[in-house]
Image (cartoon, rainbow, N blue to C red; front, side):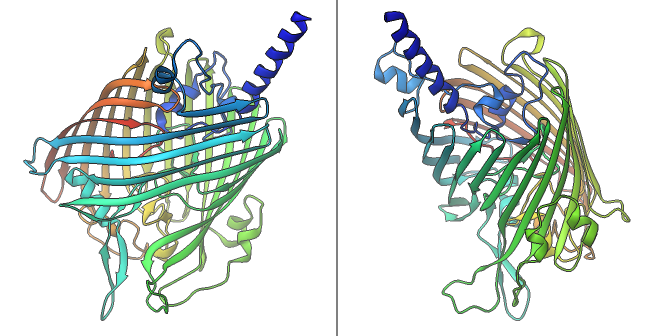
Length: 522
């Protein structure tokens, strides 16, 4: 009888662990690095996009540690509120990102700071329904080169007699801002989704959570660089190894409409559609075909119905019927590859094209190694990215591959060659994360608002070479919330063909919940 009871209790406990793992992992690069090599097999994680579920990543949600008292558990191992039984899981946490620092080389008088407070809640009912929601309230002051980029991507207001004036900076992963104190920003952001998995072949997700296509640090297809946007995604495993994804979303150009009877003029709308077909002939290889379409909805004084092609779900139809660009839609077509040729080593690549006749294309080639030299949690990555000068631009600039005036794919937008080296190591909570980004860009560097001008526009290009080096070390208190105390050292040097070579160096200390990405390394 005791053996039967023990068996039943064990079964219920393991069943609870099994279904809770269908919740999606956090989107941060640190979590993705771990997921790539979480098991000792040659299996490629994911079909080509992230985040994936804990089960697919072979990771586990931290469970209750009954060997510690309540205070020690909440600080070092558990979610702040964590409830579960055989059919239910719920976690709630406060979130922070607080730091203070100083720019050392330019003599800027003001302190750098980040003051983010937030909360998250997520859970699951059996293995059929899961959800996630988080919100953040932020005030921050950034290094000048970052500040300039955010201001250049600001929202546009009509001005008399014509043209637009920019105001209210936009921050990647943060959204539209309002001025705060001296050279600071005040902004809020949120992310949420509900996910239905009626069976192990189908997943339906609705919300504004971002997706990152690829296995790299950057994506040339679609990334989490921009602001979150409302979208509906359907993932369907047609047969074993063959998966199809269909996504439709609502996006905005942060351009105020000219005429309105509203208190505040609305932004210009556009839509996005993604089709993605992935095939894995063997567990160590994934090949994906990617098609993305931007649909025009609004211009300065007009709007139009949704293009009928917005509703068609088949990959390749939009491009075949309309070419790479028509009057109200712009298409990108790409390839996404990953080959894990050893349990600790993998290669990945992407290719994307826009205008074949004008040779507009983007390429990515990368290499990852995890648990390097059999040292657990030692990860190394090399990556190269290239994009031509008008890859993500459009003849009608309102159909550029952007949302909230920010690039949807690579953070640099158009016209660059980039090389990235990353290494990170975690040992008993102590971590070090190093990164070097080198790029050559042929862009209007002094005015990023021109980055996605119409393809027919002529703007002054600026050949610029940049090295951006970042080292962060600290201690991870809690693996459940990835709560980290850190010291961050950043050095950036730029050499410009138009003069004005500048070096920046900053030091900051802080504490944060490292659950998502913000790409400030440009």
